[in-house]
Amino acid sequence: MHLSGNVFDYFVAFGSGVLVSFTPCVYPVIPIMASFIAGVNIKGTKLMGFFISLIYVFGLAITYSSLAIFASLTGKIFGQIQNNPFIFLVVANVVIFFAFVMFDVINLPSIGVNVQHKIRPKNIWTILLLGMASGLVIGSCTAPVLGTLLLYVGSRQNVLHGASLLFVFSYGVGASLILVGTFSGILSNLPKSGPWLMWIKKFCGLVLLGFGEYFLIKAGMLMF
Image (cartoon, rainbow, N blue to C red; front, side, top):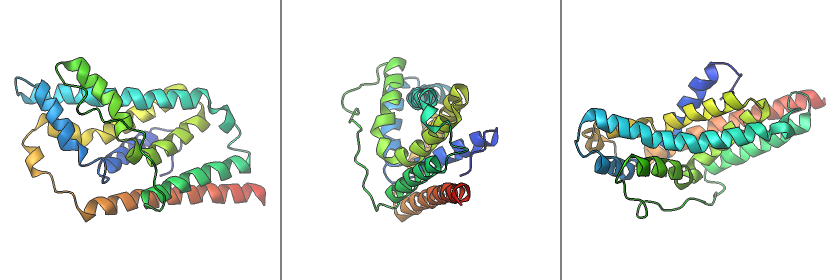
């Protein structure tokens, strides 16, 4: 995952979001969230299901884009990333830490809250609220990739680019949910949870590990 500051970044961010959505603790949440969407979709139409799904993921995007804005505005600490090898070392170690989380070598405590029984989707606003809260609910799974992206947008210090990048990442995470929310028949045809989820998680770990090694090499080149 190499982000270069151009339009290709958005493809990387979206693809990363899609991969994260198929990790073991995000994938099983899809049917639960889809049931909330179905509860609002009284008419049961595909168009309404699509609209409600977009609203839910928009809530998720608000949460993640807000984090990106904060990272961009406070990214002065990364302002010398192109010249300071020690900043590269810090970023490399953080990314490698996230890779170990993906490999289950390190357990990242969840700071999420269980909102399934606290929010009843009676209207569009509760779906938006549920989407915003889900950024914390699935935080333990998205944190490695999300944290890496936030490090990147912090180093760029470009608020618009950072917010839009995390916005696209959010819709990558929610892409499968949008499909299920639109075409309810897909829910029964979703593959069951199994070892394949762990393989995707480990693949994400390998990508992050490669990203961390990249920064280590850059740091070494600047130091020697």
